[in-house]
Amino acid sequence: MKIFIAADHRGVELKQEIKDFLKDLGHSVVDMGTDNSEKPCDYPPLACKVAVAVAKNRQARGILVCMSGIGLSIAANKVPGAYAALCYNAEAARLSRQHNNANILVLGAKFVGMPEMKKMVKIWLDEKFEGGRHARRFRKIREIEKKFLKNI
Image 1 (cartoon, rainbow, N blue to C red):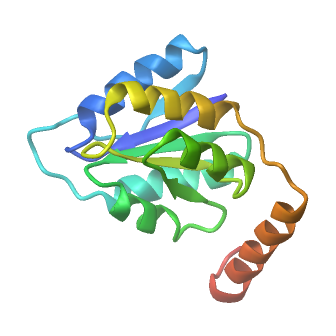
Image 2 (cartoon, rainbow, N blue to C red):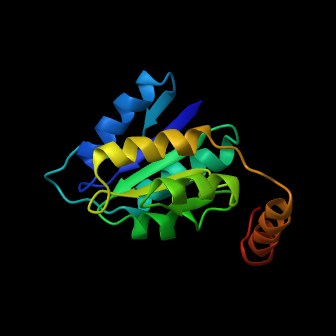
Image 3 (cartoon, helix red, strand yellow):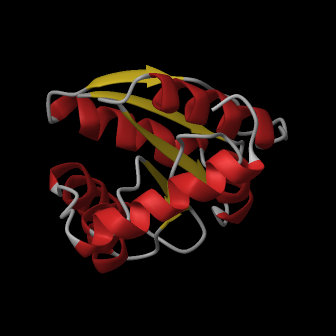
């Protein structure tokens, strides 16, 4: 699977470890920035790059990492077709796929260590959207996009 990944300066180290982990699992990884943990950078453009790439490549997924994950989630979810889920544990990662069809996993480096992150990433990549009642709810999310967002 193709995975677009980005991190701000607070998530660079974890991003690199996740990239290596993804490659070991056989995934194609596209790093969309940043690579400098010393120089502060703004996260919204990074979130936008990943969200647009994922929205345009429906078979792809995205992973974003920053200190808390909150800002990245907010920014990524502004892009139509991007469904970013901020997860702090494996069960949330599982449910974000099964129930919400999330195509972007957002991780907070301050709250989740690497062993748990790897577990979350693996579960999130392996899980499928369940459909059923969740498909009805997902369609309602798309209806909100169509109502309030342009160029869908």
